[in-house]
Image (cartoon, rainbow, N blue to C red; front, side, top):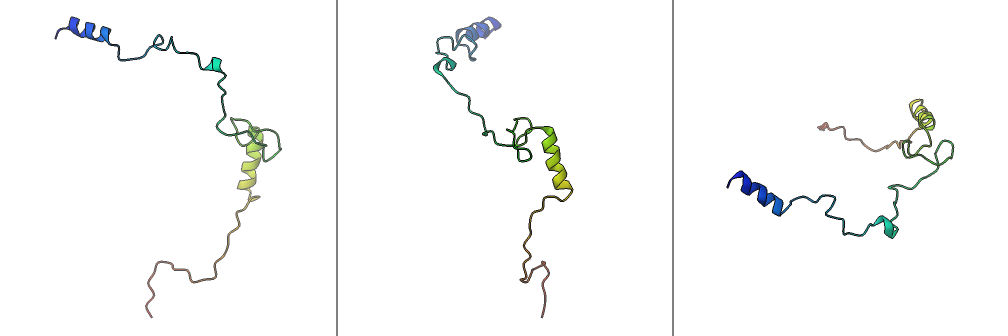
Length: 95
């Protein structure tokens, strides 16, 4: 097979779909398609304003920084439950 045969084979059956491939297809945006956000907006946990996509779930970088400061300064804490039972520390005890 020479180079001319390869060019003619590729020209007869294009293997990709270009912009003209969908020219006959109806435009889906004209049918009223609606863009749905991945997550719904919710109020900022610091100030209550609507959250922004860039700083989600906060409304601004300022509120995100306020929240980070609360975590770093110990303002937020996750309660731990102490268990009074025997705790196995992985060592075998021989009696």
